[in-house]
Image (cartoon, rainbow, N blue to C red):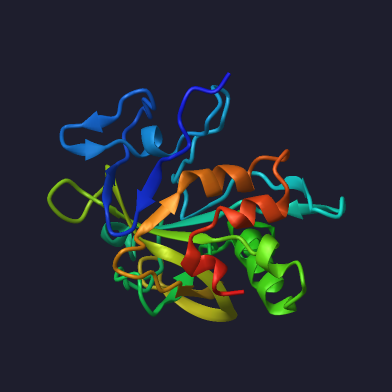
Length: 240
């Protein structure tokens, strides 16, 4: 049974509370909107949009096109940078810090850590970003419907660097990837990781909203690819 209206939108540039536990039934924490309340799907069993990893994505969905052909689809990808943790054991890398929603984020590092080079390709997050890049590079007739949007977020504390909040910088596409040898100062060793370039989609001043109806349609197997694309914001559709 549907529990929420579909006319909710993520606002670019806005900061949202990212509580633990999620408590999706609670709209506000103090004056901040609860991320899980905002992004929950329309059904009671819809999975939550969790951002506990640097690269988060829901499971791929088998979706049909208007012609009846079936495609395995990545609904969307969310990247999260934690500037307060850059250079530590969990995050030995330093992601690009462009939070303006314009231009590029470079580099956005994959999930590989020192001693984990075997996970360069097997990591789900790395796989999703590489798949998104491949879909865009193919320039096929189905690319407009298959290329997943990348929602770029940064973690924040209540009054500065830290955790507990997520700020949404913008929507992007993966336009480049490069294997790089990196230095982990905290472990005093070299290791290999993938550097991704995330290119922001330019949203106008009056177009700062990502409709949840669009994202939910992309992860709904009963909505065709073309129907989901028709719900995308104009700046995204104009790219194709």
